[in-house]
Length: 239
Image (cartoon, rainbow, N blue to C red; front, side):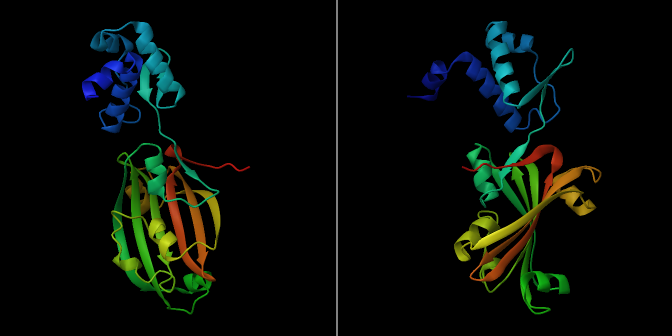
């Protein structure tokens, strides 16, 4: 079945939804931008106002769009979601939503443990550590700054990884199988460098997840992950 046949078999309201979703993903309409009016979509697709209204109404209920009475329909602020009850790669979470993950490596260095880090890792002062700083993107939008410290005894090949094709989490889950983890979450204003990487104002609050993972009886990594509060949420469930 070719693409033309597939398109013909797709309900017209779904084609309108796909058109709007593709435009948002491509950056044609960004968060806060007004989308074409229902009248314009009626003319473009040659369909009834009812059909266009269904497409827009469904995208609104899916929180992709938001309607403002007397003003128009806008692209809603996207609340990207992370799970708390199991440790997943952020790349897997993004792809599970049908979105595109990309990362940008800001820093990768060998360093020595400060007094605080030595105590957190249970290591001697100035013990070697690996340090990485990575920005993660979802459909081109920065959603996380990952500031991670790694114990070389647990992940000796950390510095040789290509973090444009694998996330630190994905490498560590293979190199240092998870034995346990602790985490905390708090709301903080981002320092200037973090705010710049997340493309937000320093006055905007961030959700900050601090996580410590253990492997082989040792602290394997300590990560601080900054998320823009207005476009991110944490969620989880259990039975």
